[in-house]
Length: 603
Image (tube, rainbow, N blue to C red):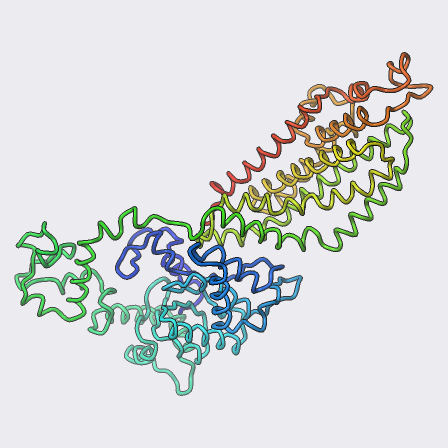
């Protein structure tokens, strides 16, 4: 407990191993904290971060499949999910979506319990919860804390909770209390004894007053009162009932000092048969051990027995972090979850209406165009409009969806749930069917209305339209991962996509020589050229007009594709344009992974 800014969250970050220490060490059961032991700790953040479109049960099932070991069968994992739902009394709301500020879903208390349930699935030995009662009413907060208390007692777990200003009921549920004041210890001990501690300092509580309110008022009082409390807490360290593990080093050295005043080195073992390198000059006598207080003697023996075996128990090989599941399991589960989470967003009813309406509008606008030179500009207009529209749709869709998803991914990466490579590949594969569905529907509606000539041309144009859409999504994902600020990412995306359209080859053909290099950075440029090559070479020929602007029409009745492309400036063959688009796809996907792996690692 403690007032705002006293260091409660910082302390939990240190205990969980998520914050680098300036000094000191963290021990779990007297073994130094390493990656292996971090898996025994669960850390429930103050913010409830979830995918809003998944139900509570779906969230727990995916978490169980990712974080429980492969040695457990699917049915065993689902039985454990049922057990956690029963323990936290989440059965009535298990089929409700998580929800967010737009979509109504779980209540505040249910989200808190869902957050705890996700962490309990790993069966941790130690639970750290950062202000789980914040934002809840008094009844919901008490109900949550009662559930945690019951779970700790029934399952034999240790629960560490930070509380800002609890009610008296919640306060008395806690067994031990650590009171912080400006980053220093103001009290540590039994919760029921804190009132007596303050009374000994001269600070008396009024009858029927909430002890939590009383002690918080005192630690937020004048500087003289705060210093008096901190000094009393420092003096309390020397009491016999104070945990010996938390004694000051000076106090421990006094306890380990023999009758001659020589301080014994606490890194040496007191028994030569347990430490062959121990010299007789460093050994305490049996009388010395018997004269020690029981807690001090226990700490001495436990410390040195751990020291004798520390080389084997805390070696690098034992502390090596192993993933709970294989790469294939992570990829499979994450692919399914990405597909299920993104489907309501990418294939919403509004997007379906927009796609069908736009397909019909484009088809009617360019309905049954004649294959003549007068209609050439209109055919090219359909191609350019289709490529640019789906480029923008996919690019800004990826850009807007990534920031909220990044919070969930960072939380799961910090807990060691899966490899980043498995998530990244699963996202690419899981969302691929959703990415190409709407452009394909648009193409199926609009292109036949222009005039269907060849199935080969139809499917080839569709392939290049989808390839351009996936490339645009890759660029959007990279920019979204690289830019932490949404406004910055939107500005950069707007500049790039508008430049892509300007240099695509349709809006401007007479580009200044010193700007011609810009067209080679335009993804639309390559897709637009490929669509023209396919349409005007494999489809019906474009007949020349009586007053044609193409010189070749003087000797021919139709316009070849080479003449159409030359009128727009330098161009590449079909295979070269395709290779450049694939290179765009691979490079931006790889850059997105590099940014997440090395520059956006969760702290």
